[in-house]
Length: 289
Image (cartoon, rainbow, N blue to C red; front, side, top):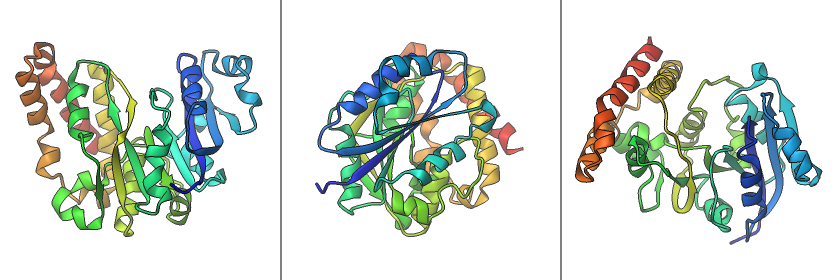
């Protein structure tokens, strides 16, 4: 693997329970050259900054720390600003709640980009919970790696543009040349927005199954409804993406969840299946209106 400068971009919000673990997982990385870590802290009611100061994180030269107000936070624009300021050859995007156990994680994630194989990559996400997310993760993050390009749109539809900046990487030159998120304040799915631009411009994205992180949620129905409402708003904002259509593999997510839960006799998931799917459907429908 060639040696390349890597810039990490990670927004923070009330991260006092995450920051020390996250930062330690980055400092332990081997085989890579992390030259910058952008921590962008949105104002909140906890002690994230004090914890970072006490731990000496803010004194390290590679740490680029900044604070913004809640009004200034944007899933797309906050990341875009840091990415444009970065000087690394590869951008690694993370969220504060991912758990990295592998010392070679960043190397595995960025190697296909550094070697010129693809323009972007994303990691395998695993949940710690035995809930519906367990099965959505299985479907979205399978056991084997694969690469997608423009040629796959007719076969995969929207799934061609699946990408996650919870744990993903992009060649910075490509990100800048494509204009990042075009200065748009996107409510959700900013990663899919960029992935669509990248794929349609002739780029390639690789899912790297060997690069693994734990990323776990246990959403309430109200939280799930709001997430899918925002997803519906995003689809309405981006008809050029929605027009790709939902392939059977994507439209069959509900069937996959039910089938796997039944196979494992996961009655807890089966009991929550209909309310969960209903919250997703109603949220998406509301967002599109």
